[in-house]
Length: 345
Length: 237
Image (cartoon, rainbow over all chains, first blue to last red; front, side, top):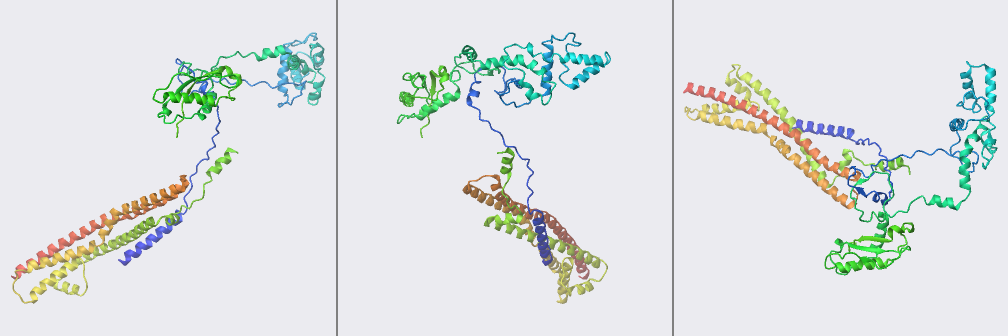
């Protein structure tokens, strides 16, 4: 027995020594770091406005799964001549090139007696392009001709006199910016840019009250409902009932919350939480009540009348609701609200 | 704040000691007792296993040696004389017991051979049962550990998890980092129970089969020897 016991003890001691050595520390899992989830707070009106649906619409799992047109990026502003504001993107050669091409196409430079190629970009732009043009023409003509052509092409550069006289800014200030980089380019550019820009500038600078009104009145007055949307209608009811048609959910929620805060449940009433009091409330533009709230239906139950009156009192007690947006007064002049009494604890 | 920083801060878990030794020391008193008991049981089980394996091998070898001598044609008187001087086990013990009974019956000068066969048979039976008892001693402990070890370990686990849940309830924190060491510590008890029980079960099955084999071998020899003795008695009568 002694042999067995000693063997066993020695074996266990060895086993535990090995165990402590090898299991001394558990290896941590190599968990890939999880990026923090960005959370956007979206106003509920964005959701509630698309809640109005069409029964024949295609069923989509996600209400926001509508076709989205990505807006085409606006071209960079090219206020070269009147750079009062900071320009984030410097004028690149590419932009000037396209502008130059347009200019070359649209107004054919008349002073040219016999332009060899009407679409040819004015060689005054870049020395490189003139070179390529020269190379192309090399088989046709010798260098003397090219020199002549270049001279001819240079002629349109001083075109500015052709510009409309209303142009508020002379082309002179532009060279100040660009002359440092591309001295050749400067004469050509004002030619292209001016016609557009002068119009814009004249509009923005002259204040015409009639024009302003025209600008402002482009939006038709709406009789409520959601904003216009190019999204597909979501599958749902066509009924224009409920708050969706009248007010955005967040505004109605704010109103309901304000009313709920003023609500005192009638003493001893039971089943108040299950009741719904449909009220018709008329407001003035200040957010005050235009008249006493109207109970459209008295909820069922013995305490129905008391609860409905308590709801009316609550609406009256909190009476001015200044948070209601004045510009949407059309929407909340008359509010049909389903007042749900808060659970009393 | 940078999301990457946030993530890293969230992942920086407190360093928790999770080695086996630390788990043992963190355990509550009951779990510690269970684990120590299981450790002792395991030690004792392996002691029995080693002891039994050695003992059975020795018994088998001595039986082989004795049978070789017994069937070598040596005189039984001489064999008996050479064996009585030392303590015997196995077949030798049976032979010595039977021969002693035979000799006593003769040396008393009795001429009656009436009950001698019965007496020799009884002596042989007693010797065989004594030998079997010696061979199978402590095997029952293996069986007990094999069947009860997992339950004991499970008890430790249940107790440990119970107390760890109580600790969680009082600390009001259920993060996995807080919960995990306590549960791991509790599970250690089951692991030890299984570690003690599995070898015990396996060894019990093997050793009891070996013991049964040795017992049947002794029975066979006893029958043969009884036959030889009864033939002698018949010859003399």
